[in-house]
Length: 77
Image (cartoon, one colour):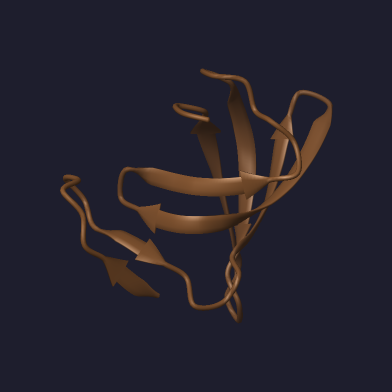
């Protein structure tokens, strides 16, 4: 991953290889890719819109690594 310069509090990393994401929000399953990753959150490009303040379960699949599961919340879209 490559670090991106920014005025943000935490450094953002841009994956060199796709980090795929599966989001479970209620009965919906939404798929996407991480555009950048930081200690404070993710920028995710998805095939469907997530409503503001929506909470969900997500699975991040990093190339050649195990799947990371987490809880998330939409802050900006």
